[in-house]
Image (cartoon, rainbow, N blue to C red; front, top):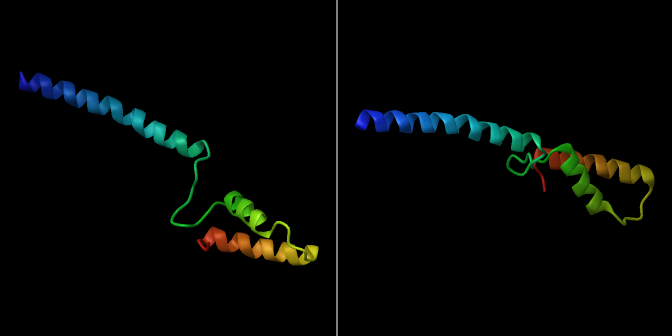
Length: 79
């Protein structure tokens, strides 16, 4: 009896593992946050920097430079 129970449990665990693995990959591919520590993707960093620099009254070149530096810093992990 225990061999049959063990075999059924093993089949159940083996059949669940590929589904869980596939769901994990699918969640990542659907655009979940890709933060590792406090690093961000380029799109996340760009959005955060745009919000930070919104409303500042500076020249276009100055804003482009600050935005570029902000994005680089947030992608590395700076807040």
